[in-house]
Image (cartoon, rainbow, N blue to C red; front, side, top):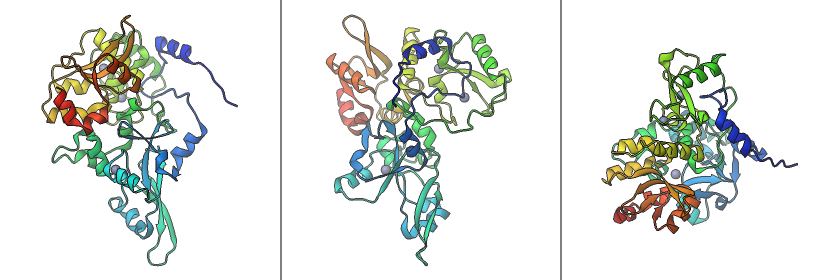
Length: 372
Ligand SMILES: [Zn+2]
Ligand SMILES: [Zn+2]
Ligand SMILES: [Zn+2]
Protein backbone atom coordinates (compact mmCIF):
# COMPACT_ATOMS: atom_id res chain seq x y z
CA UNK A 1 0.00 0.00 0.00
CA UNK A 2 1.25 3.42 -0.85
CA UNK A 3 0.41 6.31 1.41
CA UNK A 4 0.22 9.76 -0.03
CA UNK A 5 -0.06 12.46 2.59
CA UNK A 6 0.23 16.17 2.04
CA UNK A 7 2.49 17.33 4.82
CA UNK A 8 2.95 20.90 3.66
CA UNK A 9 0.60 22.25 6.33
CA UNK A 10 2.41 20.34 9.03
CA UNK A 11 5.76 21.61 7.83
CA UNK A 12 4.48 25.16 7.69
CA UNK A 13 3.28 24.82 11.27
CA UNK A 14 6.57 23.26 12.34
CA UNK A 15 8.33 26.16 10.66
CA UNK A 16 6.37 28.62 12.73
CA UNK A 17 6.79 26.83 16.04
CA UNK A 18 10.09 25.07 15.65
CA UNK A 19 10.55 21.62 17.07
CA UNK A 20 11.77 21.57 20.66
CA UNK A 21 15.12 20.02 19.86
CA UNK A 22 17.80 21.54 17.66
CA UNK A 23 21.33 20.65 16.75
CA UNK A 24 20.67 16.98 16.78
CA UNK A 25 17.54 15.87 15.01
CA UNK A 26 16.43 15.92 11.44
CA UNK A 27 12.88 15.07 10.48
CA UNK A 28 12.98 12.68 7.56
CA UNK A 29 9.56 11.56 6.48
CA UNK A 30 10.58 10.17 3.13
CA UNK A 31 11.34 6.51 3.55
CA UNK A 32 11.54 3.97 0.80
CA UNK A 33 12.57 0.36 1.34
CA UNK A 34 15.24 0.27 -1.37
CA UNK A 35 16.99 3.14 0.32
CA UNK A 36 18.05 0.90 3.22
CA UNK A 37 19.37 -1.68 0.83
CA UNK A 38 21.33 0.97 -1.00
CA UNK A 39 22.82 2.35 2.18
CA UNK A 40 23.80 -0.86 3.90
CA UNK A 41 25.60 -2.93 1.29
CA UNK A 42 25.28 -0.99 -1.90
CA UNK A 43 23.87 -2.30 -5.17
CA UNK A 44 25.96 -3.70 -7.92
CA UNK A 45 25.55 -1.52 -10.95
CA UNK A 46 24.84 -3.73 -13.95
CA UNK A 47 24.80 -0.83 -16.31
CA UNK A 48 26.56 2.43 -15.60
CA UNK A 49 23.91 4.27 -17.63
CA UNK A 50 21.59 3.87 -14.65
CA UNK A 51 23.79 6.37 -12.98
CA UNK A 52 22.75 9.97 -13.51
CA UNK A 53 25.12 12.89 -13.31
CA UNK A 54 23.66 16.01 -11.72
CA UNK A 55 25.82 19.04 -11.91
CA UNK A 56 28.92 16.85 -11.94
CA UNK A 57 27.78 14.78 -8.93
CA UNK A 58 26.68 11.15 -8.99
CA UNK A 59 23.01 10.45 -8.54
CA UNK A 60 21.00 7.23 -8.40
CA UNK A 61 17.24 7.40 -8.06
CA UNK A 62 17.41 10.93 -6.73
CA UNK A 63 20.02 10.17 -4.11
CA UNK A 64 23.57 11.35 -4.02
CA UNK A 65 25.77 8.27 -4.25
CA UNK A 66 29.34 7.15 -4.66
CA UNK A 67 30.82 4.31 -6.70
CA UNK A 68 33.50 1.81 -5.86
CA UNK A 69 34.85 -1.50 -7.03
CA UNK A 70 34.33 -4.35 -4.59
CA UNK A 71 36.46 -6.91 -6.38
CA UNK A 72 40.09 -6.45 -5.37
CA UNK A 73 41.22 -9.81 -6.71
CA UNK A 74 44.63 -10.96 -5.48
CA UNK A 75 45.37 -7.53 -4.03
CA UNK A 76 42.77 -7.71 -1.31
CA UNK A 77 45.16 -8.57 1.51
CA UNK A 78 47.31 -5.59 0.68
CA UNK A 79 44.24 -3.34 0.52
CA UNK A 80 42.96 -4.58 3.88
CA UNK A 81 46.30 -3.79 5.48
CA UNK A 82 46.82 -0.50 3.74
CA UNK A 83 43.79 1.33 2.29
CA UNK A 84 46.12 3.42 0.13
CA UNK A 85 46.75 0.29 -1.91
CA UNK A 86 43.01 -0.25 -2.45
CA UNK A 87 40.95 0.99 -5.38
CA UNK A 88 39.70 4.55 -5.11
CA UNK A 89 36.02 5.39 -4.79
CA UNK A 90 34.37 7.99 -6.99
CA UNK A 91 32.13 10.87 -5.99
CA UNK A 92 31.82 12.66 -9.33
CA UNK A 93 31.78 12.04 -13.06
CA UNK A 94 35.57 12.37 -13.14
CA UNK A 95 37.85 11.61 -16.06
CA UNK A 96 38.32 8.00 -14.97
CA UNK A 97 34.59 7.34 -14.80
CA UNK A 98 33.99 9.25 -17.99
CA UNK A 99 36.50 7.04 -19.85
CA UNK A 100 34.89 3.94 -18.39
CA UNK A 101 31.52 5.05 -19.62
CA UNK A 102 32.82 5.76 -23.10
CA UNK A 103 34.58 2.44 -23.41
CA UNK A 104 31.32 0.73 -22.46
CA UNK A 105 33.27 -1.95 -20.65
CA UNK A 106 34.48 -1.78 -17.16
CA UNK A 107 34.99 -3.33 -13.86
CA UNK A 108 31.90 -3.91 -11.81
CA UNK A 109 30.96 -0.89 -9.77
CA UNK A 110 28.89 -0.87 -6.62
CA UNK A 111 26.70 2.13 -6.00
CA UNK A 112 26.04 3.17 -2.41
CA UNK A 113 25.03 6.09 -0.24
CA UNK A 114 26.71 4.64 2.83
CA UNK A 115 28.95 7.43 4.05
CA UNK A 116 30.61 5.56 6.91
CA UNK A 117 33.87 5.45 4.92
CA UNK A 118 34.18 1.68 5.45
CA UNK A 119 33.83 -0.31 2.24
CA UNK A 120 33.18 -3.99 1.93
CA UNK A 121 35.70 -5.48 -0.48
CA UNK A 122 36.30 -8.99 -1.75
CA UNK A 123 39.05 -10.99 -3.39
CA UNK A 124 41.17 -14.08 -2.92
CA UNK A 125 44.36 -15.13 -1.21
CA UNK A 126 47.02 -14.88 -3.91
CA UNK A 127 48.79 -17.99 -2.59
CA UNK A 128 45.92 -20.37 -1.91
CA UNK A 129 43.19 -18.83 -4.04
CA UNK A 130 40.81 -18.92 -1.07
CA UNK A 131 38.14 -16.20 -1.15
CA UNK A 132 38.60 -13.32 1.33
CA UNK A 133 36.23 -10.54 2.37
CA UNK A 134 36.70 -7.58 4.60
CA UNK A 135 36.20 -3.89 5.17
CA UNK A 136 38.64 -1.21 4.14
CA UNK A 137 38.70 2.55 4.51
CA UNK A 138 39.28 3.16 0.80
CA UNK A 139 40.47 6.58 -0.34
CA UNK A 140 38.70 9.03 -2.60
CA UNK A 141 39.69 9.34 -6.27
CA UNK A 142 41.86 12.41 -6.84
CA UNK A 143 40.41 13.00 -10.30
CA UNK A 144 37.03 13.43 -8.63
CA UNK A 145 38.36 16.13 -6.31
CA UNK A 146 40.00 17.86 -9.23
CA UNK A 147 36.83 17.65 -11.31
CA UNK A 148 34.80 19.43 -8.60
CA UNK A 149 37.70 21.56 -7.42
CA UNK A 150 36.55 20.34 -4.02
CA UNK A 151 37.79 22.75 -1.34
CA UNK A 152 40.04 24.31 -3.97
CA UNK A 153 41.86 21.02 -4.60
CA UNK A 154 43.29 22.23 -7.92
CA UNK A 155 45.35 24.87 -6.18
CA UNK A 156 48.99 23.74 -6.32
CA UNK A 157 50.18 22.24 -3.06
CA UNK A 158 46.67 21.82 -1.66
CA UNK A 159 46.59 18.26 -0.35
CA UNK A 160 44.25 18.75 2.58
CA UNK A 161 41.14 18.27 0.41
CA UNK A 162 42.46 14.75 -0.18
CA UNK A 163 44.24 13.93 3.07
CA UNK A 164 41.38 15.06 5.32
CA UNK A 165 38.56 14.05 2.98
CA UNK A 166 35.42 13.07 4.88
CA UNK A 167 32.41 11.56 3.10
CA UNK A 168 29.83 12.93 5.51
CA UNK A 169 31.21 16.43 5.11
CA UNK A 170 31.37 15.98 1.34
CA UNK A 171 27.72 14.91 1.06
CA UNK A 172 26.68 17.75 3.38
CA UNK A 173 28.45 20.29 1.17
CA UNK A 174 26.25 19.31 -1.75
CA UNK A 175 22.99 18.81 0.15
CA UNK A 176 21.28 21.49 -1.95
CA UNK A 177 21.64 19.39 -5.08
CA UNK A 178 19.55 16.45 -3.87
CA UNK A 179 16.03 16.15 -2.56
CA UNK A 180 16.76 13.15 -0.31
CA UNK A 181 19.56 12.97 2.18
CA UNK A 182 21.26 10.14 4.03
CA UNK A 183 19.38 9.32 7.17
CA UNK A 184 21.05 9.71 10.50
CA UNK A 185 22.52 6.56 11.84
CA UNK A 186 21.17 5.08 15.02
CA UNK A 187 22.52 6.42 18.27
CA UNK A 188 23.54 9.82 17.01
CA UNK A 189 20.87 11.54 19.05
CA UNK A 190 22.63 10.35 22.17
CA UNK A 191 24.81 12.59 24.21
CA UNK A 192 22.44 15.51 24.77
CA UNK A 193 21.49 16.59 28.24
CA UNK A 194 17.99 15.71 29.34
CA UNK A 195 16.88 19.34 29.52
CA UNK A 196 18.42 20.17 26.13
CA UNK A 197 15.14 21.20 24.51
CA UNK A 198 14.54 23.85 27.19
CA UNK A 199 18.14 24.99 27.21
CA UNK A 200 18.09 25.31 23.43
CA UNK A 201 14.81 27.20 23.37
CA UNK A 202 15.80 29.58 26.19
CA UNK A 203 19.15 30.24 24.59
CA UNK A 204 17.67 31.09 21.20
CA UNK A 205 15.14 33.32 22.89
CA UNK A 206 17.90 35.13 24.82
CA UNK A 207 19.63 35.86 21.50
CA UNK A 208 16.42 37.23 19.99
CA UNK A 209 16.47 34.43 17.38
CA UNK A 210 19.45 36.02 15.65
CA UNK A 211 22.29 33.98 14.15
CA UNK A 212 25.45 34.94 16.02
CA UNK A 213 27.52 34.38 12.88
CA UNK A 214 25.74 36.05 9.94
CA UNK A 215 23.25 38.06 12.10
CA UNK A 216 20.16 36.96 10.17
CA UNK A 217 17.01 37.15 12.29
CA UNK A 218 14.99 33.94 12.29
CA UNK A 219 12.25 34.99 14.68
CA UNK A 220 9.69 33.74 12.18
CA UNK A 221 11.57 30.53 11.43
CA UNK A 222 12.99 29.34 14.76
CA UNK A 223 13.37 25.89 13.22
CA UNK A 224 16.21 27.25 11.10
CA UNK A 225 18.10 28.57 14.11
CA UNK A 226 20.22 25.91 15.81
CA UNK A 227 22.17 25.95 19.03
CA UNK A 228 25.74 24.87 18.48
CA UNK A 229 28.19 23.52 21.05
CA UNK A 230 31.46 25.36 20.51
CA UNK A 231 33.71 22.66 21.99
CA UNK A 232 31.75 19.86 20.31
CA UNK A 233 30.63 18.34 23.62
CA UNK A 234 26.89 17.97 23.24
CA UNK A 235 26.01 17.94 26.94
CA UNK A 236 28.24 20.85 27.90
CA UNK A 237 25.52 23.48 28.11
CA UNK A 238 27.46 26.24 29.84
CA UNK A 239 26.40 29.51 28.23
CA UNK A 240 29.93 30.26 27.01
CA UNK A 241 29.89 26.95 25.13
CA UNK A 242 26.70 27.75 23.20
CA UNK A 243 26.25 29.66 19.99
CA UNK A 244 23.04 30.32 18.06
CA UNK A 245 23.67 29.61 14.39
CA UNK A 246 21.37 29.58 11.40
CA UNK A 247 21.26 26.19 9.64
CA UNK A 248 23.47 27.51 6.84
CA UNK A 249 26.22 28.88 9.11
CA UNK A 250 25.94 25.80 11.29
CA UNK A 251 26.50 23.44 8.38
CA UNK A 252 29.71 25.29 7.57
CA UNK A 253 31.19 24.57 11.00
CA UNK A 254 33.80 21.81 10.96
CA UNK A 255 33.21 18.26 12.19
CA UNK A 256 29.45 18.15 12.04
CA UNK A 257 27.89 14.82 11.44
CA UNK A 258 24.69 14.64 9.48
CA UNK A 259 24.01 18.36 9.03
CA UNK A 260 21.98 18.03 5.87
CA UNK A 261 20.37 21.34 5.03
CA UNK A 262 17.84 21.31 2.20
CA UNK A 263 18.14 23.72 -0.69
CA UNK A 264 14.78 25.23 0.27
CA UNK A 265 16.04 26.00 3.77
CA UNK A 266 19.27 27.49 2.49
CA UNK A 267 17.34 29.63 0.03
CA UNK A 268 14.96 30.76 2.80
CA UNK A 269 17.93 31.90 4.90
CA UNK A 270 19.54 33.58 1.92
CA UNK A 271 16.29 35.41 1.18
CA UNK A 272 15.91 36.62 4.77
CA UNK A 273 19.49 37.88 4.80
CA UNK A 274 18.80 39.97 1.74
CA UNK A 275 15.47 41.24 3.06
CA UNK A 276 17.23 42.24 6.24
CA UNK A 277 19.77 44.06 4.16
CA UNK A 278 23.12 42.57 5.01
CA UNK A 279 24.00 40.01 2.44
CA UNK A 280 25.92 42.15 -0.03
CA UNK A 281 29.39 40.66 0.12
CA UNK A 282 32.33 43.00 -0.24
CA UNK A 283 34.97 40.35 -0.69
CA UNK A 284 35.30 36.67 -1.56
CA UNK A 285 35.63 35.61 2.07
CA UNK A 286 32.13 36.96 2.64
CA UNK A 287 30.92 35.21 -0.51
CA UNK A 288 32.11 31.90 0.95
CA UNK A 289 30.30 32.61 4.22
CA UNK A 290 27.05 33.54 2.51
CA UNK A 291 26.91 31.20 -0.48
CA UNK A 292 25.64 27.64 -0.63
CA UNK A 293 28.43 25.24 0.39
CA UNK A 294 28.08 23.36 -2.91
CA UNK A 295 29.52 26.42 -4.68
CA UNK A 296 32.81 26.30 -2.82
CA UNK A 297 34.83 24.63 -5.61
CA UNK A 298 33.64 27.20 -8.12
CA UNK A 299 34.26 30.09 -5.74
CA UNK A 300 37.84 28.95 -5.17
CA UNK A 301 38.33 28.99 -8.93
CA UNK A 302 36.84 32.50 -9.22
CA UNK A 303 39.24 33.70 -6.52
CA UNK A 304 42.25 32.08 -8.22
CA UNK A 305 41.25 33.70 -11.52
CA UNK A 306 40.66 37.11 -10.00
CA UNK A 307 36.98 37.51 -10.88
CA UNK A 308 35.00 40.42 -9.45
CA UNK A 309 32.84 39.78 -6.36
CA UNK A 310 29.24 38.75 -7.23
CA UNK A 311 26.05 39.17 -5.27
CA UNK A 312 24.79 36.14 -3.37
CA UNK A 313 21.24 34.77 -3.24
CA UNK A 314 19.50 37.21 -5.53
CA UNK A 315 15.75 36.62 -5.90
CA UNK A 316 14.19 36.50 -9.32
CA UNK A 317 10.65 37.79 -9.63
CA UNK A 318 8.25 37.79 -12.55
CA UNK A 319 6.38 40.87 -13.81
CA UNK A 320 3.79 40.53 -11.04
CA UNK A 321 6.53 40.59 -8.43
CA UNK A 322 6.11 36.94 -7.57
CA UNK A 323 9.36 35.24 -6.64
CA UNK A 324 10.21 32.59 -9.19
CA UNK A 325 13.71 31.55 -8.36
CA UNK A 326 17.09 32.38 -6.99
CA UNK A 327 20.45 33.20 -8.48
CA UNK A 328 23.08 31.73 -6.18
CA UNK A 329 25.79 34.03 -7.53
CA UNK A 330 24.97 37.03 -9.73
CA UNK A 331 27.13 39.54 -11.53
CA UNK A 332 24.27 41.96 -12.08
CA UNK A 333 25.95 44.47 -14.41
CA UNK A 334 26.75 41.76 -16.95
CA UNK A 335 23.64 39.70 -16.16
CA UNK A 336 25.70 36.58 -15.56
CA UNK A 337 24.56 34.10 -12.92
CA UNK A 338 25.23 30.72 -11.39
CA UNK A 339 22.12 28.77 -10.43
CA UNK A 340 21.59 25.41 -8.70
CA UNK A 341 17.94 24.66 -9.30
CA UNK A 342 17.16 23.56 -12.86
CA UNK A 343 13.77 25.33 -12.98
CA UNK A 344 15.32 28.50 -11.62
CA UNK A 345 17.87 28.24 -14.39
CA UNK A 346 15.17 28.17 -17.07
CA UNK A 347 13.39 31.14 -15.56
CA UNK A 348 16.59 33.16 -15.29
CA UNK A 349 17.33 32.47 -18.95
CA UNK A 350 13.89 33.69 -19.93
CA UNK A 351 14.67 36.92 -18.08
CA UNK A 352 17.75 37.48 -20.20
CA UNK A 353 20.39 36.17 -17.80
CA UNK A 354 23.38 34.25 -19.01
CA UNK A 355 23.09 31.25 -16.74
CA UNK A 356 25.57 28.60 -15.67
CA UNK A 357 25.06 25.48 -13.59
CA UNK A 358 27.64 25.07 -10.86
CA UNK A 359 29.57 22.38 -12.60
CA UNK A 360 29.21 23.89 -16.10
CA UNK A 361 30.85 26.96 -14.67
CA UNK A 362 33.82 24.95 -13.37
CA UNK A 363 34.11 22.87 -16.50
CA UNK A 364 33.91 25.75 -18.95
CA UNK A 365 35.33 28.42 -16.74
CA UNK A 366 36.70 30.33 -19.73
CA UNK A 367 33.11 30.97 -20.84
CA UNK A 368 32.05 32.56 -17.59
CA UNK A 369 35.26 34.54 -17.49
CA UNK A 370 34.71 35.82 -21.02
CA UNK A 371 31.12 36.84 -20.17
CA UNK A 372 32.29 39.12 -17.35
ZN1 LIG B 1 36.89 9.66 -9.75
ZN1 LIG C 1 23.97 32.45 10.00
ZN1 LIG D 1 26.97 22.44 16.16
